[in-house]
Image 1 (cartoon, rainbow, N blue to C red):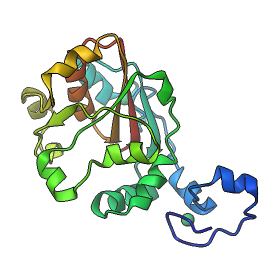
Image 2: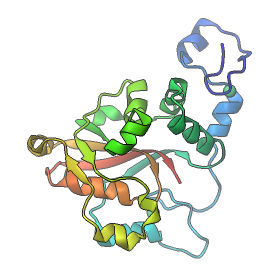
Image 3: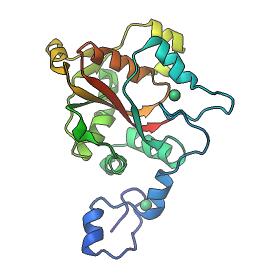
Image 4: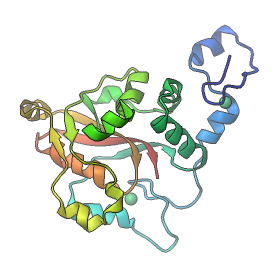
Length: 224
Ligand SMILES: [Zn+2]
Ligand SMILES: [Zn+2]
């Protein structure tokens, strides 16, 4: 077998059980490098690595002052080292194998939700990249999703200050206004690729909460 990520040969007994477990093969060194988490104290809610004297996570406190929180935030990988490389390669090359690699780290009970909703990309980004990097990973994992959100967010929001982003109008909207009633009473999972300050996800949640879902959780592939 050949590792999907480093393309080296995997020297393992390819018996029936390993064949079955590893239909999408990743070698042990790659699996280990992609599973690394920086050590240190983390926020129990957003998984951010906190400063030693921080006590309460300042990102979460800031978000709570401005937005409604999700039920929980699940995070699969630490956005550092090899994971950073993986996402870079994935976003800027059209290497389909990389979405398979990311999908292998999705340990989430998708069946507990009525609907999974990926964070959309702007039309400009779609034009440039040709795909929504988050939906593609869900597809690779065979997780059904509803692409009901759209955004006119042109791009580098991170260059704006936090206050400016909060003051600006919400860049997310429903593709079709008929979908808001569809969310009523539903258990919703919002999926994103990289959670940085959390503002993007929380803006998307604001929109989703207008449909009065029973609950909303967040799944992010990685935490910066
Ligand atoms: Zn490998
Ligand atoms: Zn936090």
